[in-house]
Image (cartoon, rainbow, N blue to C red):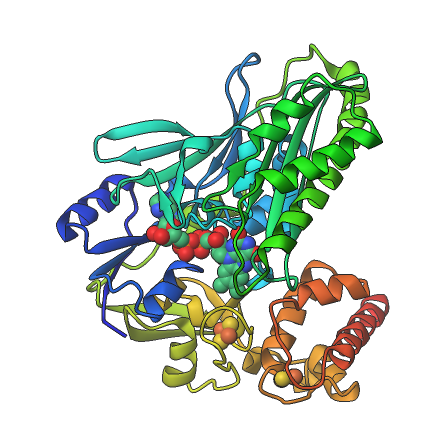
Length: 489
Ligand SMILES: Cc1cc2nc3c(=O)[nH]c(=O)nc-3n(C[C@H](O)[C@H](O)[C@H](O)COP(=O)(O)OP(=O)(O)OC[C@H]3O[C@@H](n4cnc5c(N)ncnc54)[C@H](O)[C@@H]3O)c2cc1C
Ligand code: FES
Ligand code: FES
Protein backbone atom coordinates (compact mmCIF):
# COMPACT_ATOMS: atom_id res chain seq x y z
CA UNK A 1 0.00 0.00 0.00
CA UNK A 2 1.25 3.48 -0.82
CA UNK A 3 2.25 5.40 2.33
CA UNK A 4 0.20 8.43 3.25
CA UNK A 5 0.25 11.03 5.97
CA UNK A 6 -2.63 10.99 8.44
CA UNK A 7 -3.85 14.20 10.07
CA UNK A 8 -6.34 14.69 12.89
CA UNK A 9 -7.26 18.39 12.78
CA UNK A 10 -9.30 19.89 15.64
CA UNK A 11 -11.08 22.56 13.56
CA UNK A 12 -12.43 23.08 10.06
CA UNK A 13 -9.90 25.88 9.50
CA UNK A 14 -7.08 23.45 10.24
CA UNK A 15 -8.63 20.91 7.86
CA UNK A 16 -8.96 23.50 5.06
CA UNK A 17 -5.35 24.58 5.63
CA UNK A 18 -4.19 20.97 5.18
CA UNK A 19 -6.30 20.53 2.04
CA UNK A 20 -4.72 23.66 0.61
CA UNK A 21 -1.22 22.44 1.45
CA UNK A 22 -1.80 19.19 -0.46
CA UNK A 23 -3.44 20.88 -3.50
CA UNK A 24 -5.88 18.08 -4.30
CA UNK A 25 -3.61 15.22 -3.23
CA UNK A 26 -5.38 14.73 0.12
CA UNK A 27 -8.76 13.23 1.04
CA UNK A 28 -11.13 13.62 3.94
CA UNK A 29 -12.00 10.53 5.94
CA UNK A 30 -14.87 10.17 8.42
CA UNK A 31 -15.58 6.65 9.76
CA UNK A 32 -13.50 5.25 6.90
CA UNK A 33 -15.81 2.35 6.04
CA UNK A 34 -15.84 3.38 2.39
CA UNK A 35 -12.68 5.49 2.32
CA UNK A 36 -10.23 3.03 3.94
CA UNK A 37 -11.33 0.28 1.56
CA UNK A 38 -10.58 2.54 -1.39
CA UNK A 39 -7.16 3.31 0.05
CA UNK A 40 -6.46 -0.38 0.71
CA UNK A 41 -7.53 -1.31 -2.80
CA UNK A 42 -5.35 1.54 -4.16
CA UNK A 43 -8.34 3.06 -5.95
CA UNK A 44 -7.27 6.16 -4.01
CA UNK A 45 -3.56 6.86 -3.62
CA UNK A 46 -3.63 10.05 -1.56
CA UNK A 47 -0.56 11.76 -0.14
CA UNK A 48 -2.56 12.53 2.99
CA UNK A 49 -5.77 11.56 4.74
CA UNK A 50 -7.47 14.22 6.83
CA UNK A 51 -9.61 12.72 9.58
CA UNK A 52 -12.80 14.62 10.46
CA UNK A 53 -13.34 12.66 13.70
CA UNK A 54 -11.93 15.29 16.05
CA UNK A 55 -13.84 18.34 14.82
CA UNK A 56 -16.44 19.03 17.45
CA UNK A 57 -18.77 21.19 15.35
CA UNK A 58 -19.43 18.22 13.06
CA UNK A 59 -20.85 16.18 15.94
CA UNK A 60 -24.18 16.06 17.70
CA UNK A 61 -27.92 15.98 17.14
CA UNK A 62 -30.00 18.91 18.33
CA UNK A 63 -33.21 20.80 17.76
CA UNK A 64 -32.77 24.24 16.30
CA UNK A 65 -34.90 27.18 15.20
CA UNK A 66 -37.96 28.97 16.40
CA UNK A 67 -41.49 27.66 16.92
CA UNK A 68 -42.41 28.50 13.32
CA UNK A 69 -39.30 27.14 11.65
CA UNK A 70 -38.11 24.28 13.77
CA UNK A 71 -35.61 21.75 12.52
CA UNK A 72 -33.37 18.93 13.62
CA UNK A 73 -29.65 19.48 13.01
CA UNK A 74 -27.63 16.32 12.61
CA UNK A 75 -23.87 16.84 12.54
CA UNK A 76 -22.28 15.09 9.58
CA UNK A 77 -20.04 12.99 11.87
CA UNK A 78 -23.02 11.46 13.66
CA UNK A 79 -22.59 7.70 13.72
CA UNK A 80 -25.22 5.38 12.31
CA UNK A 81 -25.39 3.82 15.77
CA UNK A 82 -26.45 7.18 17.19
CA UNK A 83 -29.06 7.65 14.46
CA UNK A 84 -30.37 4.18 15.36
CA UNK A 85 -30.79 4.98 19.04
CA UNK A 86 -31.39 8.75 19.31
CA UNK A 87 -34.90 9.64 20.57
CA UNK A 88 -34.98 12.94 18.63
CA UNK A 89 -34.32 11.12 15.37
CA UNK A 90 -36.95 8.52 16.23
CA UNK A 91 -39.60 11.17 16.86
CA UNK A 92 -38.72 13.69 14.10
CA UNK A 93 -37.42 11.49 11.32
CA UNK A 94 -38.79 7.96 11.76
CA UNK A 95 -37.83 7.02 8.19
CA UNK A 96 -34.17 7.78 8.94
CA UNK A 97 -34.44 5.87 12.22
CA UNK A 98 -35.94 2.95 10.24
CA UNK A 99 -33.00 3.04 7.80
CA UNK A 100 -30.27 3.04 10.46
CA UNK A 101 -30.47 -0.60 11.64
CA UNK A 102 -30.53 -1.69 8.00
CA UNK A 103 -27.16 -0.08 7.24
CA UNK A 104 -24.47 -2.77 7.14
CA UNK A 105 -23.87 -4.44 10.51
CA UNK A 106 -23.14 -3.41 14.11
CA UNK A 107 -19.36 -3.12 13.60
CA UNK A 108 -19.80 -0.78 10.63
CA UNK A 109 -22.55 1.29 12.30
CA UNK A 110 -20.29 1.82 15.32
CA UNK A 111 -17.86 3.87 13.20
CA UNK A 112 -19.65 4.87 9.96
CA UNK A 113 -21.23 8.31 9.77
CA UNK A 114 -24.38 9.60 8.11
CA UNK A 115 -22.32 12.38 6.47
CA UNK A 116 -19.92 9.83 4.99
CA UNK A 117 -22.90 7.92 3.63
CA UNK A 118 -24.08 10.97 1.64
CA UNK A 119 -20.60 12.14 0.59
CA UNK A 120 -19.78 8.67 -0.73
CA UNK A 121 -22.67 9.37 -3.14
CA UNK A 122 -23.44 5.71 -3.83
CA UNK A 123 -26.78 5.34 -5.69
CA UNK A 124 -27.66 2.76 -3.01
CA UNK A 125 -26.87 4.96 0.04
CA UNK A 126 -29.50 4.09 2.63
CA UNK A 127 -29.39 7.57 4.13
CA UNK A 128 -30.39 9.29 0.90
CA UNK A 129 -34.09 8.36 0.30
CA UNK A 130 -35.30 9.18 3.85
CA UNK A 131 -33.46 12.51 3.84
CA UNK A 132 -34.81 13.30 0.37
CA UNK A 133 -38.44 12.76 1.32
CA UNK A 134 -37.92 14.93 4.40
CA UNK A 135 -36.44 17.67 2.16
CA UNK A 136 -33.24 17.87 4.21
CA UNK A 137 -30.92 20.79 3.61
CA UNK A 138 -27.18 20.17 3.69
CA UNK A 139 -24.77 22.70 5.17
CA UNK A 140 -21.53 22.62 3.23
CA UNK A 141 -18.55 24.61 4.46
CA UNK A 142 -15.38 25.50 2.61
CA UNK A 143 -12.51 27.93 3.08
CA UNK A 144 -14.72 30.71 1.70
CA UNK A 145 -17.65 30.10 4.07
CA UNK A 146 -20.80 28.01 4.35
CA UNK A 147 -23.61 27.39 1.86
CA UNK A 148 -26.84 25.46 1.99
CA UNK A 149 -27.83 22.90 -0.63
CA UNK A 150 -31.13 21.06 -0.90
CA UNK A 151 -30.43 17.32 -0.83
CA UNK A 152 -32.26 17.01 -4.17
CA UNK A 153 -29.40 19.06 -5.71
CA UNK A 154 -26.57 17.19 -3.99
CA UNK A 155 -26.07 14.00 -6.01
CA UNK A 156 -24.61 14.36 -9.51
CA UNK A 157 -23.84 10.79 -10.58
CA UNK A 158 -22.49 7.52 -9.15
CA UNK A 159 -19.86 8.60 -6.60
CA UNK A 160 -20.32 12.26 -7.52
CA UNK A 161 -21.78 15.19 -5.61
CA UNK A 162 -21.85 18.96 -5.84
CA UNK A 163 -19.06 19.64 -3.32
CA UNK A 164 -15.57 20.92 -4.11
CA UNK A 165 -12.73 18.63 -2.94
CA UNK A 166 -11.84 21.00 -0.08
CA UNK A 167 -15.42 21.44 1.14
CA UNK A 168 -16.82 19.58 4.14
CA UNK A 169 -20.42 18.53 4.69
CA UNK A 170 -20.94 19.97 8.15
CA UNK A 171 -24.59 19.25 8.96
CA UNK A 172 -27.87 17.88 7.75
CA UNK A 173 -30.84 20.05 8.67
CA UNK A 174 -34.25 18.40 8.62
CA UNK A 175 -37.27 20.70 8.80
CA UNK A 176 -39.88 19.67 11.31
CA UNK A 177 -42.72 17.81 9.65
CA UNK A 178 -46.15 19.46 9.46
CA UNK A 179 -49.13 17.90 11.22
CA UNK A 180 -50.83 14.71 9.99
CA UNK A 181 -47.75 13.26 8.31
CA UNK A 182 -46.31 9.77 8.14
CA UNK A 183 -43.22 8.28 6.59
CA UNK A 184 -41.49 4.95 6.05
CA UNK A 185 -38.28 3.42 4.69
CA UNK A 186 -37.91 -0.06 3.20
CA UNK A 187 -34.91 -1.88 1.78
CA UNK A 188 -34.32 -5.05 -0.18
CA UNK A 189 -30.87 -6.64 -0.04
CA UNK A 190 -29.32 -10.06 -0.69
CA UNK A 191 -28.39 -10.56 2.97
CA UNK A 192 -28.84 -8.44 6.10
CA UNK A 193 -25.55 -6.56 5.88
CA UNK A 194 -25.46 -6.02 2.12
CA UNK A 195 -25.94 -2.74 0.35
CA UNK A 196 -29.38 -2.33 -1.19
CA UNK A 197 -30.75 -4.04 -4.28
CA UNK A 198 -33.26 -1.21 -3.98
CA UNK A 199 -34.43 1.04 -1.17
CA UNK A 200 -37.39 3.44 -0.95
CA UNK A 201 -38.74 6.12 1.35
CA UNK A 202 -42.21 7.62 1.34
CA UNK A 203 -43.54 10.74 3.10
CA UNK A 204 -47.23 11.65 3.10
CA UNK A 205 -49.38 14.42 4.49
CA UNK A 206 -52.99 13.27 4.82
CA UNK A 207 -56.30 15.05 5.25
CA UNK A 208 -58.73 12.36 6.29
CA UNK A 209 -58.24 9.72 3.58
CA UNK A 210 -56.96 12.15 0.96
CA UNK A 211 -53.26 12.67 0.33
CA UNK A 212 -52.51 16.41 0.51
CA UNK A 213 -48.83 16.03 -0.33
CA UNK A 214 -46.58 13.10 -1.10
CA UNK A 215 -42.85 12.57 -1.59
CA UNK A 216 -41.27 9.33 -2.76
CA UNK A 217 -37.57 8.56 -3.27
CA UNK A 218 -35.73 5.41 -4.31
CA UNK A 219 -32.08 4.28 -4.34
CA UNK A 220 -30.00 1.76 -6.31
CA UNK A 221 -32.43 2.07 -9.22
CA UNK A 222 -30.72 4.86 -11.16
CA UNK A 223 -27.38 6.67 -11.31
CA UNK A 224 -28.30 8.73 -8.22
CA UNK A 225 -30.88 8.34 -5.43
CA UNK A 226 -33.96 9.65 -7.21
CA UNK A 227 -37.25 11.40 -6.39
CA UNK A 228 -40.18 9.64 -8.09
CA UNK A 229 -41.88 12.84 -9.19
CA UNK A 230 -44.37 11.05 -11.46
CA UNK A 231 -45.69 9.03 -8.52
CA UNK A 232 -45.75 12.11 -6.30
CA UNK A 233 -47.87 14.08 -8.79
CA UNK A 234 -50.16 11.09 -9.38
CA UNK A 235 -50.94 10.59 -5.69
CA UNK A 236 -51.43 14.24 -4.68
CA UNK A 237 -55.05 15.15 -3.95
CA UNK A 238 -56.33 11.58 -4.31
CA UNK A 239 -58.04 9.33 -1.82
CA UNK A 240 -55.68 6.41 -1.29
CA UNK A 241 -57.66 3.24 -1.90
CA UNK A 242 -56.37 -0.33 -2.34
CA UNK A 243 -56.94 0.02 -6.10
CA UNK A 244 -54.94 3.26 -6.21
CA UNK A 245 -52.10 1.60 -4.30
CA UNK A 246 -51.82 -1.03 -7.05
CA UNK A 247 -51.64 1.72 -9.66
CA UNK A 248 -48.97 3.47 -7.58
CA UNK A 249 -46.98 0.22 -7.48
CA UNK A 250 -47.01 0.02 -11.30
CA UNK A 251 -46.16 3.69 -11.73
CA UNK A 252 -43.19 3.44 -9.34
CA UNK A 253 -41.88 0.35 -11.17
CA UNK A 254 -42.20 2.22 -14.46
CA UNK A 255 -40.47 5.40 -13.29
CA UNK A 256 -37.17 3.98 -12.02
CA UNK A 257 -34.20 3.34 -14.32
CA UNK A 258 -32.30 0.40 -12.82
CA UNK A 259 -29.51 -1.69 -14.33
CA UNK A 260 -28.59 -5.35 -14.04
CA UNK A 261 -25.45 -5.92 -11.98
CA UNK A 262 -23.90 -8.41 -9.56
CA UNK A 263 -26.59 -7.75 -6.94
CA UNK A 264 -29.75 -8.01 -9.05
CA UNK A 265 -31.39 -7.89 -12.43
CA UNK A 266 -32.99 -4.79 -13.88
CA UNK A 267 -36.45 -6.39 -13.84
CA UNK A 268 -36.23 -7.55 -10.22
CA UNK A 269 -35.15 -4.06 -9.12
CA UNK A 270 -38.07 -2.50 -11.01
CA UNK A 271 -40.59 -4.96 -9.55
CA UNK A 272 -39.35 -4.79 -5.95
CA UNK A 273 -39.28 -0.99 -6.06
CA UNK A 274 -42.98 -0.93 -7.02
CA UNK A 275 -43.83 -3.39 -4.25
CA UNK A 276 -41.81 -1.48 -1.64
CA UNK A 277 -43.32 1.90 -2.61
CA UNK A 278 -46.80 0.41 -2.12
CA UNK A 279 -45.88 -1.12 1.24
CA UNK A 280 -44.08 2.00 2.44
CA UNK A 281 -47.11 4.06 1.50
CA UNK A 282 -49.37 1.77 3.54
CA UNK A 283 -47.02 2.14 6.53
CA UNK A 284 -46.81 5.91 6.12
CA UNK A 285 -50.61 6.24 5.99
CA UNK A 286 -50.90 4.23 9.18
CA UNK A 287 -48.31 6.43 10.85
CA UNK A 288 -50.03 9.62 9.63
CA UNK A 289 -53.30 8.39 11.15
CA UNK A 290 -51.61 7.72 14.51
CA UNK A 291 -49.80 11.06 14.30
CA UNK A 292 -53.07 12.88 13.57
CA UNK A 293 -54.62 11.89 16.87
CA UNK A 294 -51.42 12.91 18.74
CA UNK A 295 -51.02 16.11 16.66
CA UNK A 296 -54.54 17.21 17.48
CA UNK A 297 -53.77 16.80 21.14
CA UNK A 298 -50.53 18.79 21.11
CA UNK A 299 -50.88 21.30 18.24
CA UNK A 300 -50.18 24.84 19.33
CA UNK A 301 -47.88 23.95 22.21
CA UNK A 302 -44.46 25.55 22.24
CA UNK A 303 -41.67 22.99 21.92
CA UNK A 304 -38.91 22.56 24.41
CA UNK A 305 -35.57 23.29 22.75
CA UNK A 306 -33.93 20.01 23.59
CA UNK A 307 -30.24 19.62 22.92
CA UNK A 308 -29.33 16.00 23.29
CA UNK A 309 -25.84 15.25 24.50
CA UNK A 310 -24.82 12.29 22.48
CA UNK A 311 -22.04 9.91 21.78
CA UNK A 312 -20.20 11.82 19.11
CA UNK A 313 -20.15 14.97 21.23
CA UNK A 314 -18.72 13.00 24.09
CA UNK A 315 -16.27 11.41 21.70
CA UNK A 316 -14.93 14.70 20.40
CA UNK A 317 -14.73 16.39 23.81
CA UNK A 318 -13.30 13.69 25.98
CA UNK A 319 -10.60 12.88 23.55
CA UNK A 320 -7.37 14.70 24.26
CA UNK A 321 -5.06 13.23 21.69
CA UNK A 322 -1.34 13.42 22.02
CA UNK A 323 -0.01 15.85 19.47
CA UNK A 324 1.17 13.82 16.52
CA UNK A 325 4.90 13.49 16.35
CA UNK A 326 4.62 13.46 12.61
CA UNK A 327 1.73 12.75 10.25
CA UNK A 328 3.60 9.61 9.19
CA UNK A 329 4.54 8.18 12.57
CA UNK A 330 2.94 8.61 15.96
CA UNK A 331 3.28 7.37 19.50
CA UNK A 332 -0.15 6.10 20.49
CA UNK A 333 -1.09 5.35 24.08
CA UNK A 334 -4.14 3.29 24.88
CA UNK A 335 -5.53 0.71 27.25
CA UNK A 336 -5.19 -2.79 25.86
CA UNK A 337 -6.97 -5.55 27.73
CA UNK A 338 -6.71 -3.65 31.00
CA UNK A 339 -3.12 -2.50 30.65
CA UNK A 340 -1.79 0.91 29.67
CA UNK A 341 0.34 0.41 26.56
CA UNK A 342 2.06 2.55 23.98
CA UNK A 343 3.31 1.88 20.50
CA UNK A 344 4.95 3.83 17.75
CA UNK A 345 2.84 3.26 14.65
CA UNK A 346 2.97 4.27 11.00
CA UNK A 347 0.04 6.23 9.59
CA UNK A 348 -1.03 3.50 7.16
CA UNK A 349 -1.33 0.81 9.84
CA UNK A 350 -4.72 -0.40 10.99
CA UNK A 351 -5.56 -1.46 14.54
CA UNK A 352 -5.49 -5.13 13.44
CA UNK A 353 -1.86 -4.73 12.31
CA UNK A 354 -0.85 -3.19 15.64
CA UNK A 355 -2.62 -5.87 17.68
CA UNK A 356 -1.16 -8.74 15.72
CA UNK A 357 2.30 -7.48 14.79
CA UNK A 358 3.26 -5.15 17.64
CA UNK A 359 1.51 -6.81 20.57
CA UNK A 360 1.37 -10.34 19.13
CA UNK A 361 -2.29 -10.71 20.08
CA UNK A 362 -2.97 -13.01 17.17
CA UNK A 363 -6.42 -14.01 18.40
CA UNK A 364 -7.67 -11.11 16.30
CA UNK A 365 -7.76 -12.53 12.77
CA UNK A 366 -7.64 -10.76 9.45
CA UNK A 367 -9.91 -12.37 6.85
CA UNK A 368 -11.24 -10.08 4.15
CA UNK A 369 -9.53 -6.88 5.31
CA UNK A 370 -12.54 -4.94 3.98
CA UNK A 371 -15.16 -4.83 6.72
CA UNK A 372 -17.12 -7.80 5.35
CA UNK A 373 -16.30 -10.89 7.45
CA UNK A 374 -15.94 -9.65 11.05
CA UNK A 375 -12.98 -11.97 11.84
CA UNK A 376 -11.05 -8.91 13.05
CA UNK A 377 -13.75 -7.70 15.47
CA UNK A 378 -12.48 -6.16 18.71
CA UNK A 379 -14.05 -3.77 21.21
CA UNK A 380 -13.03 -0.12 21.17
CA UNK A 381 -14.42 1.72 24.19
CA UNK A 382 -16.76 -1.23 24.62
CA UNK A 383 -18.23 -1.19 21.10
CA UNK A 384 -17.50 -3.74 18.40
CA UNK A 385 -15.48 -2.50 15.42
CA UNK A 386 -13.69 -4.05 12.48
CA UNK A 387 -10.06 -3.52 13.42
CA UNK A 388 -9.00 -4.05 9.78
CA UNK A 389 -10.57 -0.67 8.84
CA UNK A 390 -9.73 1.22 12.04
CA UNK A 391 -6.73 3.52 11.55
CA UNK A 392 -4.23 2.88 14.33
CA UNK A 393 -3.72 6.64 14.87
CA UNK A 394 -7.37 6.85 15.98
CA UNK A 395 -6.87 4.39 18.86
CA UNK A 396 -4.97 6.96 20.88
CA UNK A 397 -6.58 7.43 24.30
CA UNK A 398 -9.08 4.63 23.88
CA UNK A 399 -9.71 1.27 25.51
CA UNK A 400 -9.28 -1.81 23.34
CA UNK A 401 -10.39 -5.31 24.26
CA UNK A 402 -9.40 -8.35 22.23
CA UNK A 403 -10.28 -12.01 22.70
CA UNK A 404 -7.15 -12.34 24.87
CA UNK A 405 -8.67 -9.78 27.24
CA UNK A 406 -11.77 -11.83 28.02
CA UNK A 407 -11.35 -13.48 31.38
CA UNK A 408 -14.11 -14.96 33.49
CA UNK A 409 -14.28 -15.30 37.24
CA UNK A 410 -11.24 -16.97 38.88
CA UNK A 411 -9.17 -16.59 35.69
CA UNK A 412 -11.48 -19.03 33.93
CA UNK A 413 -12.94 -18.62 30.45
CA UNK A 414 -15.43 -15.80 29.95
CA UNK A 415 -18.99 -17.24 30.08
CA UNK A 416 -19.36 -16.52 26.34
CA UNK A 417 -16.19 -18.48 25.54
CA UNK A 418 -17.34 -21.32 27.78
CA UNK A 419 -20.76 -21.39 26.07
CA UNK A 420 -19.10 -21.57 22.62
CA UNK A 421 -17.08 -24.59 23.78
CA UNK A 422 -20.10 -26.27 25.37
CA UNK A 423 -22.49 -25.72 22.45
CA UNK A 424 -20.08 -26.53 19.63
CA UNK A 425 -20.00 -22.87 18.50
CA UNK A 426 -16.26 -23.14 17.85
CA UNK A 427 -16.33 -24.38 14.29
CA UNK A 428 -13.48 -23.41 12.01
CA UNK A 429 -11.92 -21.45 14.88
CA UNK A 430 -10.74 -18.63 12.62
CA UNK A 431 -14.02 -16.69 12.85
CA UNK A 432 -14.66 -17.57 16.51
CA UNK A 433 -12.78 -14.72 18.25
CA UNK A 434 -14.65 -12.15 16.13
CA UNK A 435 -17.98 -13.80 16.84
CA UNK A 436 -17.29 -13.91 20.58
CA UNK A 437 -16.32 -10.22 20.60
CA UNK A 438 -19.53 -9.31 18.73
CA UNK A 439 -21.52 -11.40 21.20
CA UNK A 440 -19.77 -9.65 24.10
CA UNK A 441 -20.79 -6.21 22.78
CA UNK A 442 -24.33 -7.38 22.05
CA UNK A 443 -24.91 -8.96 25.48
CA UNK A 444 -23.60 -5.85 27.20
CA UNK A 445 -26.27 -3.83 25.39
CA UNK A 446 -29.04 -6.41 25.59
CA UNK A 447 -28.60 -9.11 28.25
CA UNK A 448 -31.62 -11.15 27.09
CA UNK A 449 -31.65 -11.14 23.28
CA UNK A 450 -34.18 -13.08 21.22
CA UNK A 451 -32.92 -15.38 18.50
CA UNK A 452 -33.65 -12.70 15.91
CA UNK A 453 -31.70 -10.12 17.92
CA UNK A 454 -28.77 -12.54 18.23
CA UNK A 455 -28.76 -13.10 14.47
CA UNK A 456 -28.82 -9.35 13.83
CA UNK A 457 -26.11 -8.82 16.45
CA UNK A 458 -23.72 -11.16 14.63
CA UNK A 459 -24.77 -10.11 11.12
CA UNK A 460 -21.28 -8.63 10.64
CA UNK A 461 -19.61 -12.01 11.34
CA UNK A 462 -19.62 -14.47 8.48
CA UNK A 463 -19.39 -18.25 8.71
CA UNK A 464 -18.76 -20.19 5.51
CA UNK A 465 -18.37 -23.66 7.01
CA UNK A 466 -21.11 -25.09 9.17
CA UNK A 467 -23.68 -22.33 9.58
CA UNK A 468 -25.02 -20.31 12.44
CA UNK A 469 -27.19 -22.74 14.43
CA UNK A 470 -24.58 -23.67 17.05
CA UNK A 471 -23.19 -20.17 17.17
CA UNK A 472 -26.65 -18.77 17.94
CA UNK A 473 -27.19 -21.51 20.53
CA UNK A 474 -23.87 -20.65 22.15
CA UNK A 475 -24.82 -16.99 22.51
CA UNK A 476 -28.24 -17.96 23.83
CA UNK A 477 -26.52 -20.28 26.33
CA UNK A 478 -24.15 -17.50 27.40
CA UNK A 479 -27.03 -15.09 27.97
CA UNK A 480 -28.74 -17.67 30.19
CA UNK A 481 -25.58 -18.22 32.23
CA UNK A 482 -25.09 -14.47 32.59
CA UNK A 483 -28.73 -14.05 33.65
CA UNK A 484 -28.35 -16.81 36.25
CA UNK A 485 -25.16 -15.14 37.58
CA UNK A 486 -27.05 -11.85 37.80
CA UNK A 487 -29.74 -13.48 39.94
CA UNK A 488 -27.10 -15.03 42.26
CA UNK A 489 -25.20 -11.77 42.81
C1 LIG B 1 -19.40 -4.38 4.86
C2 LIG B 1 -20.03 -3.07 4.49
C3 LIG B 1 -21.40 -2.98 4.40
C4 LIG B 1 -22.01 -1.77 4.04
N1 LIG B 1 -23.36 -1.72 3.99
C5 LIG B 1 -23.98 -0.56 3.71
C6 LIG B 1 -25.40 -0.50 3.69
O1 LIG B 1 -26.09 -1.48 3.98
N2 LIG B 1 -25.96 0.69 3.36
C7 LIG B 1 -25.23 1.80 3.05
O2 LIG B 1 -25.81 2.84 2.74
N3 LIG B 1 -23.88 1.77 3.07
C8 LIG B 1 -23.24 0.63 3.40
N4 LIG B 1 -21.87 0.57 3.43
C9 LIG B 1 -21.10 1.75 3.05
C10 LIG B 1 -20.63 2.66 4.24
O3 LIG B 1 -20.47 1.93 5.42
C11 LIG B 1 -21.59 3.81 4.50
O4 LIG B 1 -21.77 4.56 3.32
C12 LIG B 1 -21.08 4.75 5.62
O5 LIG B 1 -22.14 5.54 6.10
C13 LIG B 1 -19.94 5.63 5.18
O6 LIG B 1 -19.61 6.49 6.25
P1 LIG B 1 -18.11 6.70 6.73
O7 LIG B 1 -18.16 7.66 7.86
O8 LIG B 1 -17.44 5.42 6.98
O9 LIG B 1 -17.52 7.41 5.43
P2 LIG B 1 -16.00 7.41 4.90
O10 LIG B 1 -15.67 6.10 4.36
O11 LIG B 1 -15.08 7.98 5.91
O12 LIG B 1 -16.16 8.49 3.72
C14 LIG B 1 -16.91 8.21 2.57
C15 LIG B 1 -16.65 9.33 1.55
O13 LIG B 1 -17.17 10.57 1.98
C16 LIG B 1 -16.16 11.57 2.15
N5 LIG B 1 -16.57 12.26 3.39
C17 LIG B 1 -16.96 11.66 4.55
N6 LIG B 1 -17.43 12.58 5.40
C18 LIG B 1 -17.34 13.78 4.77
C19 LIG B 1 -17.70 15.11 5.12
N7 LIG B 1 -18.28 15.37 6.30
N8 LIG B 1 -17.48 16.11 4.23
C20 LIG B 1 -16.91 15.84 3.03
N9 LIG B 1 -16.57 14.59 2.63
C21 LIG B 1 -16.78 13.59 3.49
C22 LIG B 1 -14.85 10.80 2.21
O14 LIG B 1 -13.80 11.59 1.70
C23 LIG B 1 -15.18 9.63 1.29
O15 LIG B 1 -15.07 10.03 -0.04
C24 LIG B 1 -21.21 -0.61 3.78
C25 LIG B 1 -19.82 -0.70 3.87
C26 LIG B 1 -19.23 -1.90 4.22
C27 LIG B 1 -17.73 -1.97 4.33
S1 FES C 1 -13.96 -7.50 8.49
FE1 FES C 1 -11.93 -7.16 9.06
S2 FES C 1 -10.90 -8.86 8.28
FE2 FES C 1 -12.92 -9.10 7.49
S1 FES D 1 -17.05 -20.62 11.92
FE1 FES D 1 -15.46 -20.00 10.55
S2 FES D 1 -16.23 -20.43 8.59
FE2 FES D 1 -17.77 -21.14 9.94
